[in-house]
Length: 87
Image (tube, rainbow, N blue to C red; front, side, top):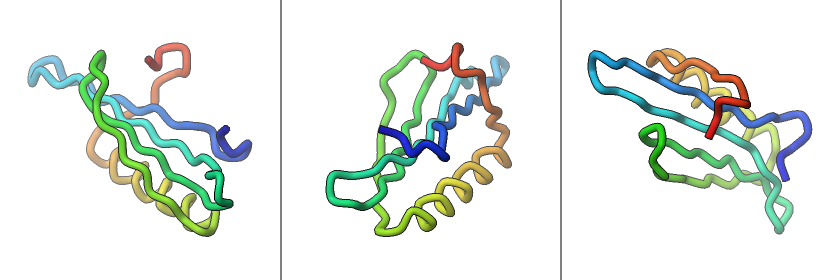
């Protein structure tokens, strides 16, 4: 279950001239142990990709990491896509 104030984010970076079709997803979820997990998924669009989970004892720390990673991806050219386009 995703935190109500933290909707998942789906970003894509497409550059056909470089054969680049990438996605990056971020979401904050509560864990069974009262912590908060920042779940990152990335890879080539249409492929399963990779996933990394980072846990935080405080929700604010998870949100700061979410915003830091989002900003880094946007600087690299990733843009948000509408939920109906997300895989």
